[in-house]
Image 1 (tube, rainbow, N blue to C red):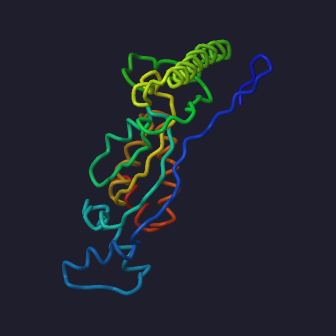
Image 2 (cartoon, rainbow, N blue to C red):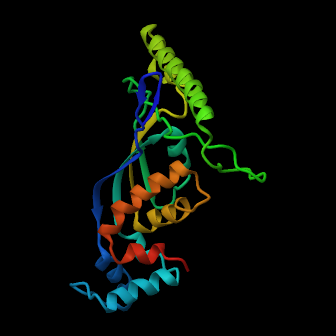
Image 3 (cartoon, rainbow, N blue to C red):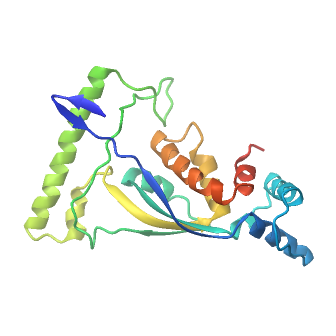
Length: 227
């Protein structure tokens, strides 16, 4: 929370919510064993843990592509568009403001970060000082409120939602159903949990990892381990 002129602004976190999944650590082992026409009915904590570690270490990704996880994601558009770059092994169905004209909600950063030093072309630096934080808040909230008002005015005039949405900024929240393989989510998290990734994208990747790790308690750490 940040207080200015008696008002309290609330930071709304990004969300990844579990919906469904298919498969288990045993599924991965049996997908690998089928090469030898073998199948185990139960997970062996010793031999199967070794097998999963070997598969992950040696880059045998196909057994990890059989389990599927379905999540419901809620992020601002600028985070969603970064994640949408991940296509292989994933299916994406998003809420569309061609059809939905409910009141939009907007992401508000909990702090504003400065440009990075030393000429780095991407990423951000440390948090700005209090004075600049307050000024950045004022600028941001003014433009967001203006966009919200313009959107409502266009709808009131009878403009169709698919055109009225053009005035909404990239900070508008969007939601989508995301189904993908364990291998695909591991690739996403290994990239987006890196310290060079945008902080907001790191945040949502942490939520994804927190959901998947208990579902695949042996495979997930093996996939996320440094090689």
